[in-house]
Length: 117
Image 1 (cartoon, rainbow, N blue to C red):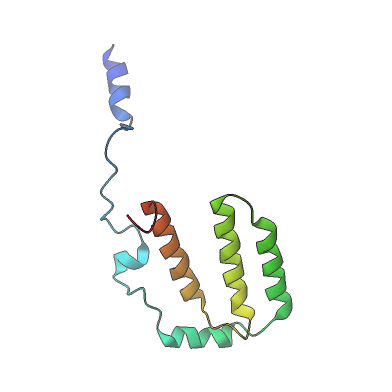
Image 2: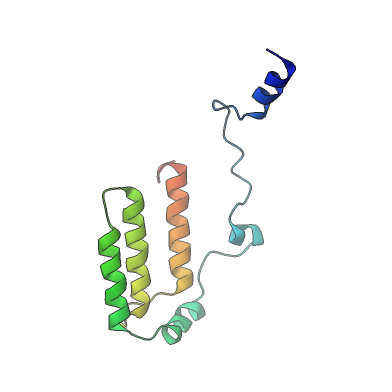
């Protein structure tokens, strides 16, 4: 093997190597030290920002039903869209912050390989 080939080989990541240390906060909120608990004021503000709108709510729920498939990714996207539709439902109490934090939590669990890890 020539020196150039060895240099190229060394530059490639080792597929058997242990994953990088996951303790580095990749999440911007975590890196900034922001508490992931949504204050009540944010939930209350969402009511004023997103007035009840049956047409928008139904449209989002139809799209959620259309994208839902057999893969876990399509199910997750569908769930997120359905949750966003709750912003326009007067019977629901949620905020964009709550939705974001919920989705972030789900993605972290999925990244870890499940809740039991």
